[in-house]
Image (cartoon, one colour):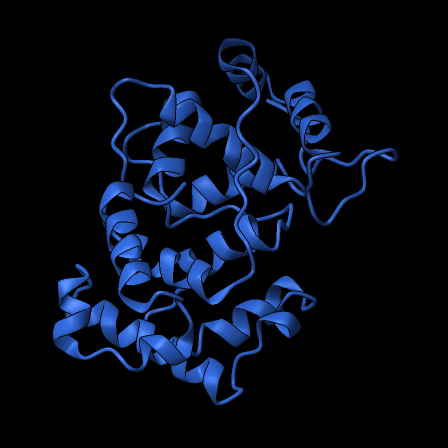
Length: 225
């Protein structure tokens, strides 16, 4: 087990990028032998990123509680239907048109709410990009259908913030349980306490966990990546 709250005078980063990502992986592996074993067996994880766009947030909403393939299929249908996936184009689609794009009634409500918030200026993605993690969460959580998991994925993949652990992500949590050989009855608070040991680089540790999860032939492709 590594020391609590990793700090290193030569590694100070609030965001990760192509220049520091592998270094952050190695830094975590130096302190955590389980993460090191993943890198040794499977190499570095992909540095998953997505653009700061309306389409990205729609994609993350579509990924809630379904397989990656299902979410991507719905996204592609929306893109084909709208020609350009913008808030304005989404608001023009009827319920039947959304349903034909494999979007559920509930997610239609969520996506329209997001689109309307952007159109009326309640949400400005450029301004959100320079907010603190807490400010981003406070801003987005007000929207119906956008909860902590969606915000965690947005913070990690889009804003590339280094210190997020998506506790609502089954793939990350199950990978952690298996890698650390945790009891099936381990609690949410106990899991969060374990992940605190990776602070301030929990996002990078999470990507190593996803890499471990996806490298397992038993994996199930639900939730995001």
